[in-house]
Image (cartoon, rainbow, N blue to C red; front, side):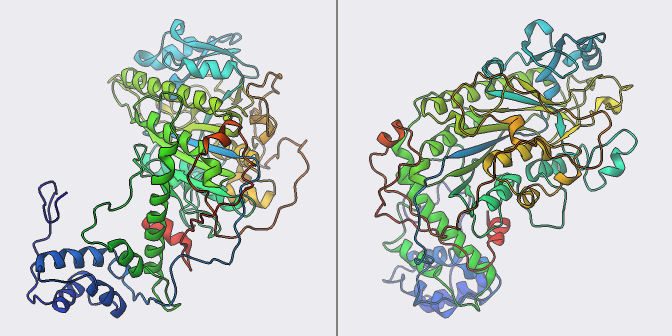
Length: 608
């Protein structure tokens, strides 16, 4: 890039100041860009970057610094305390990660995946031929039974189901005991029937992308609370006991959004994230130091919004520097497909591999891919998307096994809703409700289909609405109740904090239903227990399951807010030995996170 050249820009400012001296330029930019809010300290910092007689060059410097200031990004007054730095509190002594590592990977199939073509009744359905009902109801979008990958199960309408032809690796994981399904699952405010489903879900907009997607990512229906995601609230609860990380590999951070100041701010990385340092060719030497000065620590009278901006900017710059140094030190042993979901899981695999260097004990990741909203050409479009999911899942599983952490990582794949069972006349299906989803990982108690697949697939059956929309019998609350317990949440009040609507569920999946012991062997061979199936007439009182739980551990003291990240050096020797708890040698490098002094929630809601 040549300074002052705009050939590759969509546009640029043509503003020419009326007064050509330094203070005249600053005064005019103050009026135009901040409405006169630019503080005297900010003006002095900007003035110090201007020298010489090149008016155009000095104007560019001033414009860049003004738009990097909190004065520009907020409507209040930003009062800097120039006697302090903005690096946070150094009094807290950070600890090294010592507890066993666990990670949850949330994969969102965007647009409403047709998952009644992911898990299909195959054979052994008793007196009813459920596959015949499937083909009759689905019409042109039905899949040939001979092409399906069969799996066996118990406590379902059929003893054998078929997996979509293009996801053979999911069959392999299932048969190896590393994957399970959640049948007829979705957004569920409370158990419902044909007679009361509308009144029960008056708080939600059924069959609507925006509403159902938001609830599927947040797993709650209370619109009066701050926006937080299900994994964000999970991190909020466990951050007092564990060193935590929270990462989104796409622009939608809803799933991992948190609001507890003890929780780490969300790292938002593109699935194609290239670790390069910020502004490698600045307009003048010292640009970064002046940006830091503009976003320095503040007095208590300073604007809250400006402070949140400064915190987010400072943290982002520091994290960018750290990741630019750290990520190039590791490269997956496995070849990942060059697709959205392939690149996302590749990035997540690298971050999991670097868990010791990142100093984390609990990680949550979110990934999103596809446009499953197939109102036409469903079979063709889902063939492609399910193939991409299959290849990415295979690479991710292989890489995690190679790194010895497959039993520490649990992946769950969901969508905002299933689709109608009936074909719409254009070779597609429309917005439905319940769907069939899956979990995978070395800790998963596999070879099971949790919940209850519909006993019938025609409009006459009690769970089938018009056009083949299926009323779900398992809510997302039930699924993530098991994940929260596995992650280390034990107290009832904490589980309710993670899942505010869980008390309305008739039955909840527990950790022991979905997961093996905390640290099982890589491929568990013990016979799994039977899955939890909702009753035909669920009670209104929630049942806590299972009852045989391990003794609860006493919570430890809260850690300090400042955490030490280890220096980037030869870290692969530690990884080869898979020693999460071996980080015994304190690092001289202390990369501190700049946190807001006031309301951390605004950082996530407004700026991320």
